[in-house]
Length: 115
View 1 (cartoon, rainbow, N blue to C red):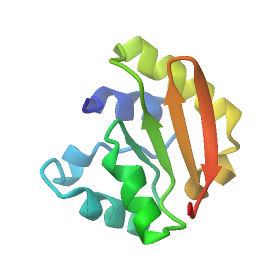
View 2: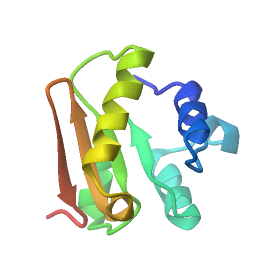
View 3: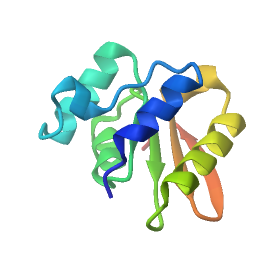
């Protein structure tokens, strides 16, 4: 499931410096390029693509932080509600070095690097 550009807009309206990959011309970029750009720009990657955590683990990466939506098809409202809950649970300063997994029934976090 691709995350909608409106999620970046919603984050921006709440004071976060958020940008959708498509706005950076990265809509067809390999996952590793998006991770590299996020690291350079000091951003957190939001995704539902299970390849991202695997890439971070294989690289033993300490950054960028990752917020991963798992376990279903979320409506736009559910995306916003669950993301707000996750961001309230994890201190903002810790997001750049965290893997946050959002599932329908819970939010969990692991520190980077993993493995």
